[in-house]
Amino acid sequence: MVERWQDERVFGANREPAHAPLRAYEDVPAAHAAQVLNGDAPPPSRWLKPLTPSAWAFNLARTPASAPRTQLDLGFDTSDWGVLDVPLSLEAAGYGQAQYTNVRYPFPLQPPHIPEEGNHVGSYQTTFELPNEWRGRRVLLEFDGTGPAATVWLNGREVGYTQDWALPAEFDLTRLLAGSISRRTHVLSVQVMRWCDGSYLEGQDQWWFSGIHRHVCASSATTHERGSAPLQRRTARTGAPVQQAQRSRDLRLHRVHNERGDRRRLRRIGGHGAAWRPRCPRGG
Image 1 (cartoon, helix red, strand yellow):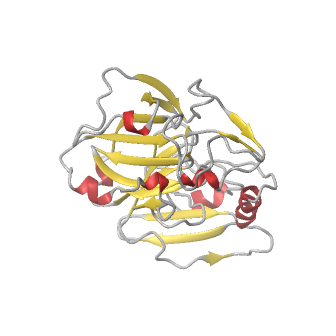
Image 2: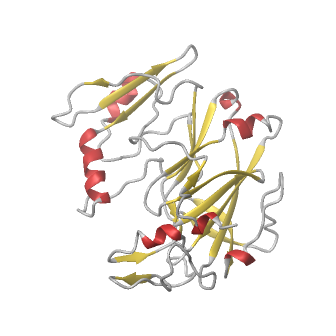
């Protein structure tokens, strides 16, 4: 059986569809007052829980075969692990060496296969608690940037898999949390590979980094909120905010993004230079 990190037909599992950057606000006045531009972080919200910046338990394995395995309900055994500040690329933290390539690949060419030797694997783990008012609501886990290939577990159960070093990945935790409703402290485990088959597509005049290099957060919404309400546009030509107001009996959750900022992000992906900013708020 081909490992999924070497299978060109697989580039994600249980990952939410990609969408425009979304923000959560307590009410309409707060959304209007924020005037979010270019991905600026909004004020703290009770429906957002940043999981970074913080120190996570960390282990580095030389090959995928020697990487640790999770245990049901427990995650990884971290008793002899070190700690690592997240977000931070592994190479910047001193694990492995950052490589710059132009036309040459940093590994032997045999697509879609990646040699095991030199394909180190970083394993991360942290714990978190969710507020009681999140119960019965949809809970999403958001990675602003991790990879090149990453597998995510919650309480030892696989959440999903993602490839793409530079793009966000979002997972729905609702069902897994419903199965552990009596549990107060949850264990989040992540395993990130140095290379995957997708690395063949990312080799273009760049530095090669790996790990959880951008922010991670959890967010809460009512069960029908994502993608169900129409957009109410003020103006697209001037780049004024676009509002998506979604109502339920117990909550009004408003998200604002800026179309001009989205276009700049697209130019950044295309290599034309606008700076990236995280979707998740920094700090608590």
